[in-house]
Length: 212
Image (cartoon, helix red, strand yellow):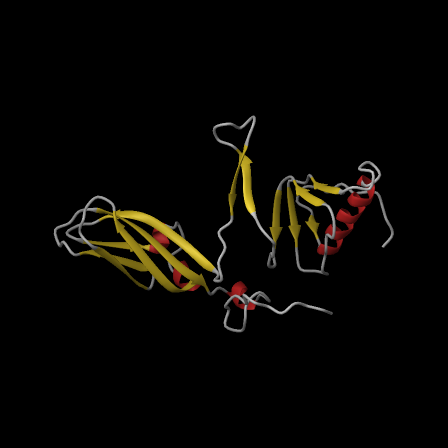
């Protein structure tokens, strides 16, 4: 492809992978003379950028900065990742950086607190997570529950049936406050169809390299 002057995006414009790749290349070429052969920087200033399925785009050198929202309809693979924001206590002088949570499963996390009534509590995971009734079951599988008694010493345990989390205390008169954490694996249509998972929808954690 011949080089062209870097284009200006219109807010809300649909950007295909081919257009995005061309934009990055043109910005790199435009920036190299300024940087004396150094790293080029491509900057997107549109309020929203959408990248749909298309031809493969590869950024071999340089950085890409998106000043706005970036929506990717496919899978995203990365070497590492963080969030980076203005430090809430020192916004003028420091950033705050946290790493992403990684793991070999496509996990979902749900958490909350509940007060026991006569040693018992029930949590609707859809309601607690502000989701439409039935979403938890449609989205997840292999759910596990972890509970902690925050205000007393009586043992507590949790079980999950459907989208209901049942928490019980060994003390049948307890009104303690219990923290709960539910971890489940995704089973939605996208995770079953993506090339990042196998035919059962489980993440392929040791894929062979493509030497083609």
